[in-house]
Image 1 (cartoon, one colour):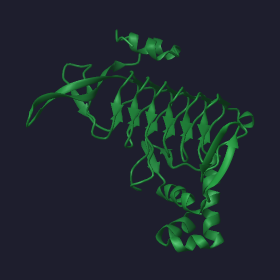
Image 2 (cartoon, helix red, strand yellow):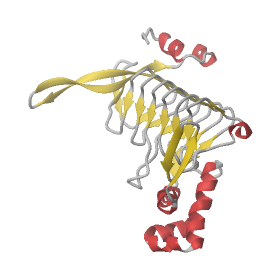
Image 3 (cartoon, one colour):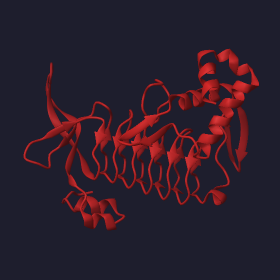
Length: 268
């Protein structure tokens, strides 16, 4: 499949031949069933499979538009929706929407939310009300995406890495995580934290601040903050994320994001 996908990506005319278009369709089926991923965990990090993203982009090109209805609702799109949630062992609350080509593992709960093609949501995770999981985003086991969380998608530019939320993370209400930011295992993000590749993530839990970007270390507890920056028109506060400590062992026994943050006397 990889060879055919790579060839077709270089010459889209090849998609008119069945062996190439079929390779695209088979790839999407493998992604849908979780046997193939846009990003794969490897020792020491993650490996992005760019050819899988290529297949997803070409799938848009070969799929015809179609209309279908659900009760009084009507849709007109190229992508089918996932179905057979009972057989998958997934709880899907109306109006949860997941596109075909997204993998949803057993014991996942989808509140009214949206999961896009290429995404991977692992076992026991919760996608809460009005949360969105963008294309190709990777969500680990036992993750809680709270209400209104926005996990960014990535298909283009092709070399861009997907957002990765590792096992056991708590992502607070209205958080935004985009541009391939990696939130490592069991980290906790308080409400309204915004993380992009340019967002300063500052560890203020020690004697001196430690600054990083693009990655939240494992078990960190993070809240939104600001730092002062000079501009031609004056000095203004710019948003950042503050690491205020590490999850405590007592927090590991709790399922509440509020409890995890209140260990640090943070109001939520």
